[in-house]
Image (cartoon, rainbow, N blue to C red):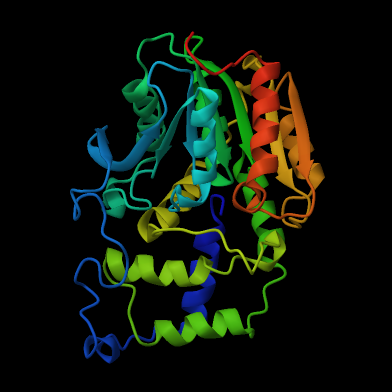
Length: 342
């Protein structure tokens, strides 16, 4: 889910539930505040999870392939999601790429932080330091692959850092919602429109929220997972093959959109300076992000192509992984971003 959508969903849910809290109804079975009972443990609670430390936080992260090969850095959706549904991209390691997966600050299985400590430019710096952490040299070739909010995140990085001294040689942006606050607000109206506020999905979540308050990271993350597991109707995700996830980060899911609204963000001023070709990949069925929205965003770049993957919605990386990978490989070949030793 891109910036703002989770926060809007959360606000609607709280209105429907009236803030009712009866956490004691669950305590007869388990302690919801004990790590691991409601949601998987984070890297600070389970040291066996793969992780890195950058910019004052510990991130759930892992890499596949030869560290000397050209690097593909993935950026998951949210804010607050995780990289589990992006793992089909691990196949790029077999093509000679060094593929990086990481859960963003406060998201997935990464370390949790108080809302007051979350800052937009801290988030941007996290990505810069992830690039540096995995780079073998200042000239290590990099391509960014972002999905949903992650595609917005990648574009934000390009707007602020350009090709990062020549390192960033390309980007695949998969259904970004927008690069300005107004574009994202317009997207959220389309995203929310098909919801049935009296339907089963909202009723199930509202019922659960009456039994447990969203106090503390585990409880909040658990409730956010219930909100998002089915996905919004407008995205047309496959109900028989839902995209998997480990854990959502409720605090950043709410805080990042708030900061975006407060700053009235616009990440477009320097996008025309990124001259490498950019590939936009989209799902044919996603009504919240029809073709014209991606055409609007692609126009900020001097060279961009839009490819539509038929018969799929927003979760095209999970549902149509082979097709997605073929488009990625074709794009990498076209821009000269070839796998293997350089």
